Length: 239
Image (tube, rainbow, N blue to C red):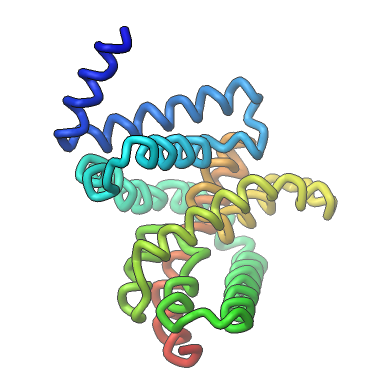
């Protein structure tokens, strides 16, 4: 059995299938753990999958470039999935019109506050201009954040890391914060997660309820549109 697994690993490590196979298997294992934990916020499938892949690449001394040759297929679908968020946006167009002012205030408040906090601590600890530029779009979904980062002089891959960490922290701590603040509305919970924890937060919201997921997708899409237009201008002033 061990010899068979070793032969499979030797074969995969020499082909682009390595990254794709590792990504799919690791995520399925993370999802299995999440189901067994009854979708506890800290049993995040993405976090589990990331940890497993990083540990395996480190133990086998496999270069990240080799892994990404296959993982780029999943990376390509990330942009497609982001565009597909237009569907919940369209389905909630009536709510958007009805609560346009409240949603706009909430979106702007969330976007501005997370930007101010991030920039304050980055400058406090002496981060470089490139690191600050990479940090600016951290609350936007990764495909859009990477494009913004490249346009303002940041490092797209570093921005992707910041986005993932932000999403995981937001998805894991969201329930605790909402409960502490007494926020019970699924629409408010979902919108907050989508606006600040982007894709991972939206996935978490969908696990809680369809309403929360729909509003999270709405916030994610709106934040992406606003950020892609505003952040390049804001970044010139900050940097």
